[in-house]
Length: 170
Length: 67
Image 1 (cartoon, each protein chain N blue to C red):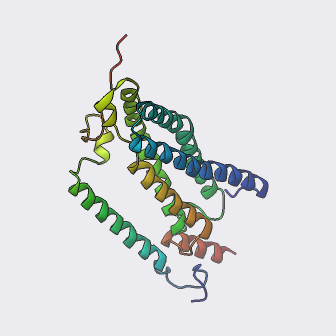
Image 2 (image 1 turned 90 degrees about the vertical axis):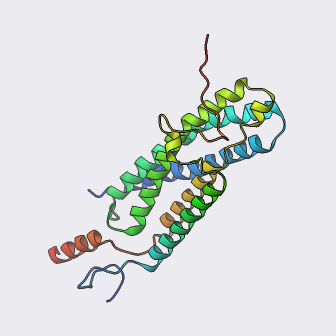
Image 3 (image 1 turned 45 degrees about the vertical axis):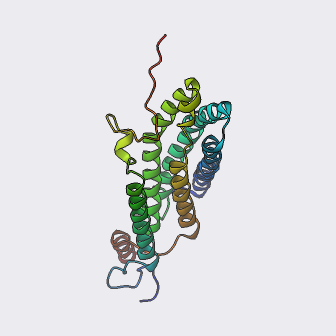
């Protein structure tokens, strides 16, 4: 079912807020991860891991889930569809993958933040930062962003078949 | 063929060039990731985050808080 123009613009606005907010928060998370990895100050390591845990659970996870849900709505409620264009499929698959990895990774972040609150000396130094997940995640989000803005052409077999059916019906 | 939307094509359109380039780039990224993981001990993978998954040396296991 195709959304009405007013509804489509509202859902698009929500989707943009979630998606761009997600990228911004991952950048902030990455800054905290770099800070935890490079500082020699124990209090900074503890603060960084606490902030990463809070930012992850209360900002990044809701934004990621919101982006996934609103993206799905945009695909199903517009002419683009979910399986008709390659760019939509790849965009959705990467968003889903990012959500799954994020939800699998966050308990590790909480566990490390717990350790950071109580550890001292070498134990605290050994924690390091969190660079791999936000770094790869940021790269994936930028690929998704580029795909969504440029919308590179390319119909799937399913999309082509649907177009042919519509053409024959009209 | 008139355009790439498939409107006037008798057969399904071929996979676009950008898709092939993206697939090659993704494959290259995976290969680089695997090589780096092997060179650094290979302790990282999705299984690490699952229940019973092995922790890599750089990560600390959860702490049980007791009252």
